[in-house]
Length: 181
Image (cartoon, rainbow, N blue to C red):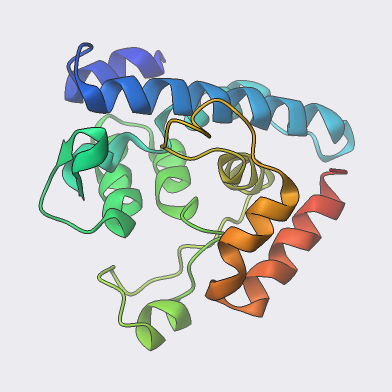
């Protein structure tokens, strides 16, 4: 599997969206591999982590985030499940789950119902070690010029997620401990 070839099915290489997506995904992949190497006792699949990290945000072109060249109709939060649909159609169902489950620190069915989120009503929580590692690695970067390839601090990540509930901060702290960060 070549994640870049899959990305190029949906993005022109000279597009603004591609110029944000690929460097961001490369940063996340590098960080995810660094995290995975810290926990060899958990037997993370490094090849899968690298591939799925590159594809985790493939659905952004389907959402409205004009600042990075995405002119779709859906809210940004939808890029995960929309990416899942794309990657499933490409024949990679396990990679597709990473797309859906990397948003925030995971989105529960309870979150979707209580916050009336525009998402399918199902659990969107990272389950496998690889999903958790990629989700966590993604939090160190964002799709803005400052943090596209430069890592955020753990304090900044915590601050970014404070408004989403204490359970999210607890999950972040559990993962930081589990992955020895």
